[in-house]
Length: 113
Length: 115
Image 1: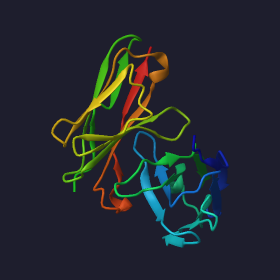
Image 2: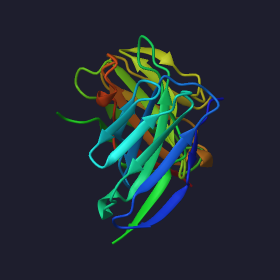
Image 3: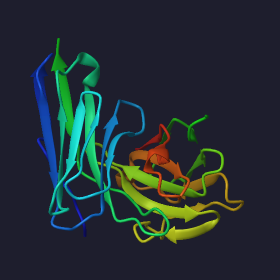
């Protein structure tokens, strides 16, 4: 079945450092998304990407939809302690009604003050 | 705007028992999803409803799992009988179905432990 390969699995960084994580698939998708999940909560959408090659920012977060439509990356600049959490990439092919999201296994981010 | 409400937050049951989870989506959202998130994994879709009809239940283990959304609003997911491997967080999500993925919202989930 379709699956997303997300890396790295975990990251330990110093406050102020930049972070980069990516997601690849052997399948083509028309939408890529990045979520953050805090302990005991559901995933919260950070950025949605709808066009191949699209580069979108949300504050210190920047994400890109790969040209091949098979990959995406997320960058976080100048990390702060509240960036701690698990980041998931997700992808879908939605048509008339929104389809289901396929998720990667997540990148656990730890930030040392 | 109220979010997606789920209950209970936690449930511990013995294997072979049955359990039910409840979800109330964001008001006006036509589409409702149930996801299963096993520890260390991303969420996996179990079932998608559009109003009170099932759109996709291809990954629902139908021998033990069932879900309904009778009036097209809130929904229940049931497991009967539960197995140890059903231990997971069960997330409900809802969306308007109009293509605005910013409105595709997850609840906080129900953490199920089967012992």
